[in-house]
Every structure is written in C-alpha cells, then in structure tokens.
Image (cartoon, rainbow over all chains, first blue to last red; front, top):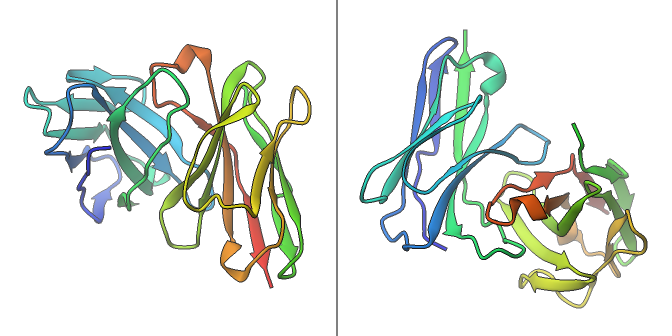
Length: 112
Length: 116
C-alpha cells in the first residue's frame, strides 16, 4: 500500500468548505484512493473513492490531479456534525477481500 | 439501510479469560473483517474472511485469536486467553459482491473490550 501523508488536524467554522489534502507520492498504477470518516467511539464510514480526475457524491467531492500523487477531499458547507477524523487510504483493489490500512488521519474540528 | 451489528457493546473480562465477540454482517455480503482500535491509536486490521476461511491475517492475529462463521448470519472473533494489551475497540466489517472493486466496507458500532 502506498504511504499517505495528511495534516494531523484542521479547524473550520460551520458553513465553510473544507479541503483536506492527502499526499501519496508512490501511488501505483493500479491503486485507488479512498476516504473514510470516523466519529468518536464509532466505526469508520466510507465516504468516497476515486482513481483520477473528480468524483462527487452526495457527501463530498474528491479531486485527483493527473499525476495522482495527491488528492483532495472537499466537504461543502460543513456543519458541527462533520467533526470527525478523516482517513485517506491508497491501495490496489484486488477483487477479493481488501485489507484496509488506516493511518492517523486528519482530525477536523468544526465550530460555530 | 442495512447495517452491521455487534454484541456486546462493552465487555469486561479478567486477564486469561476467553471472550467471544459477535457480529452480524449485512446479509448479502460475502467478505467479513475484524479490526481493532486501541484507545487513541490507529484502526488496525486483524483478519479477513471469505468462503468460510481466512483470506488474510495480520501479525496481531496470533494463535490466541480465531474467527468463525457458525451459521449463515453470525461472524465471531474469539480471544482464547485475554491479555491486558487486548483492551481495545473491536470493529467488525463486511463488504459485498457489489463492492468487489471497491474499498467500501461497512463497519459495525464496535465492541469495547476491557481486560482487567
């Protein structure tokens, strides 16, 4: 699995857009980029996954530049309930059971 | 929306005792996992399970650990002789055939294991 680097923590005010960038310089050709969210005392929750360019769902957008050495998770208009730890994971999807390797993530604190 | 459930939510046990953590994965899922998270630390992979056998296990998953799918719905993690360092939150997860080409796993709420 490619090593990922993301900020330890970020702060935001409610209503702002938050962009969390993840660096993965040694990403391999077959690797996908996946983001998870974890609230305190809960299991991680899948947010979004992409391979290149831009992916958007009802929760977030994922921007991946052409060289794929980094990616940015964008959360539009965050609320207090978006306070959580966000994890960037990079790895090959083999089509079988995929082991998830979590780093320390980015702790996002949203305040009024 | 279907969800993964886990019981108990909190288990307190004495060192050396056996514990069984139970999980009910999403019904049409094929792949099952256990992860753990020691307080304040990373989520760590323990084991994956498919077609009634272990697909992959981590270094943490030593001979003290075992997994079983005793029937069509439950998936269990057994720790034979608990140690203080086994105290952690244990998460069960599952993923389905529809998410084979995906890292989308559905996690349960966790069982907090406290070993005294």
